[in-house]
Amino acid sequence: MRRLAVAVGCAITLAGCGGEEKQANCVVKVYFRTNASQAQITALRTQLDSNERVDDVEFVSKEEALEIMRERFPELVENLNYNPLPDTLEVTIRESDAEELVDDLTPSPPGVESVRPCPTRRVATLPVP
Image (cartoon, rainbow, N blue to C red):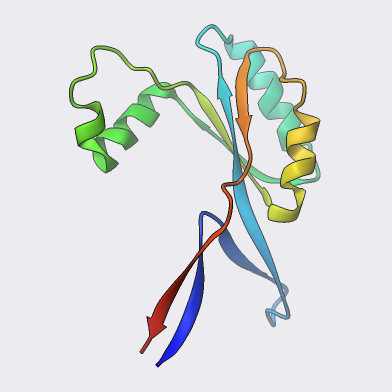
């Protein structure tokens, strides 16, 4: 039986029509402080949108994040009295640019609590029929 290595946490996209070159993409998450202003969030999103390393920037509100958690992990959030999740920017970049983007965001911009790079790639071996 053949086996296939599958990367978890990074999406593989094909560059070019023929798929001659593969480039791994990943998401760097920027978590905001609870007191971050809308102006701070907008300023950082604008900065990231103009960064050549960035393919996409998506804002996820703390309310949306809680709803996602309710759908995916209801047992973890069923007894919450408040929403502990922060507003977040999910920044899609080429995996090879992750360290540089994190460096670009160090020290943390105003209103930012933390920046989390792509998760370490985990490889699972799955049987291929």
